[in-house]
Length: 182
Image 1 (cartoon, rainbow, N blue to C red):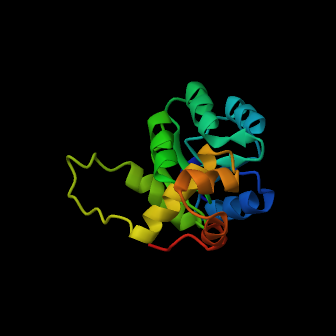
Image 2 (image 1 turned 135 degrees about the horizontal axis):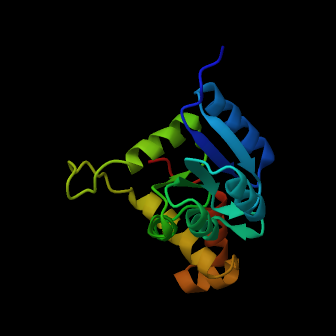
């Protein structure tokens, strides 16, 4: 007889294949799962069966994961949320935590990464904890800044290049590169 799940996790991502793979991984670890691929589905699932935790993608097609954080916490104030994205920036991470997310991690991330993010989100504030912060590399900081300015410019490459004071082709080369791993 299988063990009773320890907690219920809501997984919200517009990539249905990713959702199902992550749900399978979480079920193997003993969690009950619910899936949603957009804002409306996530609200409906939460109203029907409130989850203890949620993993929310920042970009949900036409929907925004940041808005979903606020709406889910209005329904289930004790829900712990981790924001997951492939387009992260420091500013977006700050926005997510201000809205109530316990952590913010970047794709690619597996079930272990996500569970570790939930665990890190439960630690005491830095003022009470040991400081073991490693600042991002210059390349990583540059990539995050470019992503934030690009988002602020509505994805317009030419406008972003002008705002950053670099040539459009240089910006395109930087955008074609993968984010630095550090």
